Length: 111
Length: 119
Image 1 (cartoon, rainbow over the protein chains, first blue to last red):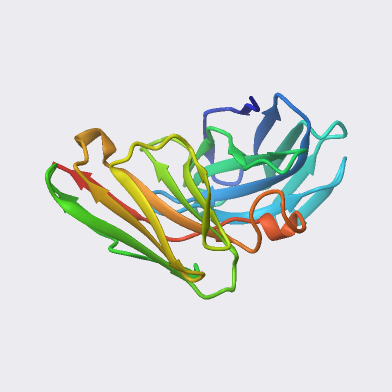
Image 2: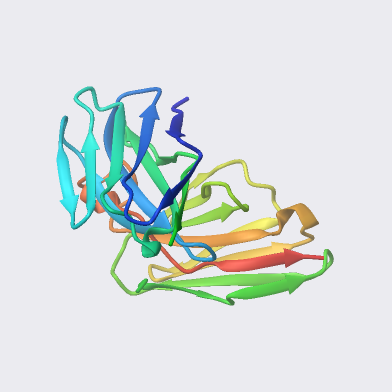
């Protein structure tokens, strides 16, 4: 079955540093979604990527979908303490399957 | 702010109790979900309802019983749970069920969750 992995598992950065998390699927995806979950909170939808090679930006966040549609990345420029949380990718296969969540990357930002 | 509302936010129940978790959405979404999330883990799909009919049961034990009274409501009935069932239970909805409609219609919106402790 489809598997989605994320690296790193944890990342500690100093405030102002950049951060990147990578998502890799064992199979080609039709689309991928990214979620953020604050400590004690619930997953909040950030963005959806559909096209091969797609790049989308939201302020300091940049999302990429790989050319082969098997990997994706989330890059945060100049992290802030409000960026703290766990970032999950969730991929959907080509046959309309349910989304498979990656294990998440937990980001800590030191002030 | 989430438009998926869950109650209660916290629940403590004994192993012989019967309780229910409730979920409501008024976005006109046709698919509703129950997820279970343990600490430091991703959400784990339990059930999917599409157009008020159960479409997916991810081999969930029968002590969890979902119910969809109408297109806006989703319940999860709990009976004879075990301490290992303690977790955050997340309700979610999407415009369409996976595999139906457009990709954007599959975007999943989560409620704030119900923190369940089984003692």
